[in-house]
Length: 391
Image (cartoon, rainbow, N blue to C red; front, side, top):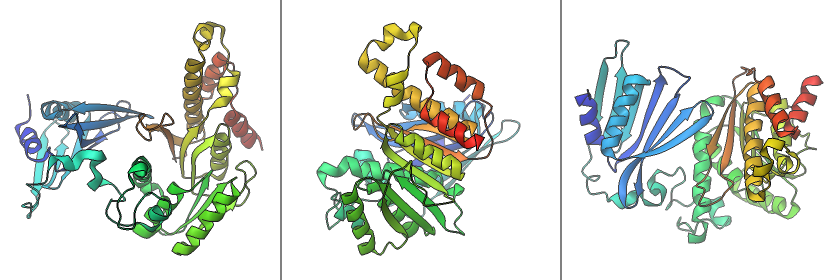
């Protein structure tokens, strides 16, 4: 039987003014650990996008209002003890007691007159008003990198890059509790390239959030490093530096809190991950690229009929590579998730590995060896981690 107060609350707040609904405090962490729900315009109509976190996996589904009501009722009865609703119209909390009693409390905003006429189309283009870096507010480095005009408008050809930057900052926002704001946080960005995201990370953490940070961007392209260094100096970003060098040979730090590696090609990602583990970094954010290693080496007689198709083998190799990377990080004491970085329609390289160190090493070495044996592979990251553990 539906809870009337829950249904009435959703009727009031689940509309175009909704910011998000977060379901937390799971009854059983082995199923779902958290759900985040946000509004979205799909095929011209208002829908609600639910992202379910289950272990290291994320599942997505779209719901209309009636489906959202049923979904919320089901989840609050069987999966979660708490839900928090944030809207331009107000906020609400849902608490479930030990005996299953559900309490719904609503706090309405005193001034909502201006919101009632806000058009539904404000949700278009990924709901611009909810971006961390907002269109219409000039950001110097975005202007210099060709993403934004002087008056804060996004250059049409760079809109995907603007969305990617904001999506990346959402991942940063999620791991803020793992960073200590009372001391300087040391961050290395391996393979920083043109450094859109490196500048965004510094701007968000230091300028917007006030975290004391020191960030180093490393790349093999000298001209790119030279330009990024000039930009950082011109903005007065004293704790942001760019260095020319190779990931595998980098020895410029004894202790690092966070390692970022975005589109480092093939095994360069593995060297960056191994460095992070060696430092005991609290956070790792990695968007792998060009996973050639397993594609070259994996063999299995049973899978031969499947592997004969080049594009299938390539895609399977990429997925196996990142899954093994995630499991190896789990074995080293990292709570690891594989998440969608950006929509597949914009780039096929859309997987982000997010690992937060909790010190609880997963007893999965036997399973990792079994998978490697099945595929006939021994990934570089596995070898690097074994070498580190033996020294």
